[in-house]
Figure 1: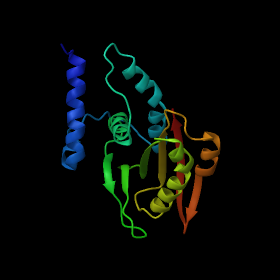
Figure 2: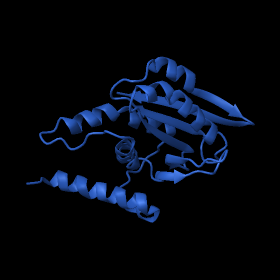
Figure 3: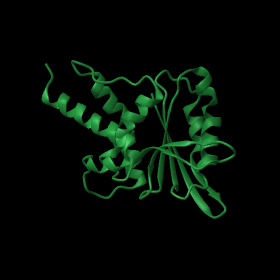
Length: 187
């Protein structure tokens, strides 16, 4: 027997999945009104652990995150209600014979959110290189002035989170363009 809130959650997840495959449907998702900034998006993402803990502690746990795709879905659900023009899985331009795909883009906020699920010790040690490759990809992107890396490291494979943040976060200037890079690591 399912409760009303479970049915409602299934409907929202269904809408999100439909919006992912058809950008025209993203207008059907509920959107509260208010002023949203890149900083407020980061504040929303800071609540990740509380949201995940809540969903895992229910009598019938709803959700676990075991890969990057589930992480992207979870973050999309967290952000979409506040960021009206958030679009998932947006292909970027080809750079250095390589295509990339932004996890989430908000043109109105000039914000890109990249989600990374740290899957093993090797990935934990090499993620810095991956983040630098992404920074290189977005430094010239016309709709990105803030790049947020959201790293979910449930097994704590990243050797030094503080060193990673010091190395990645900050303002970078490229030919007159400023790119602000933020790095959130949750476990």
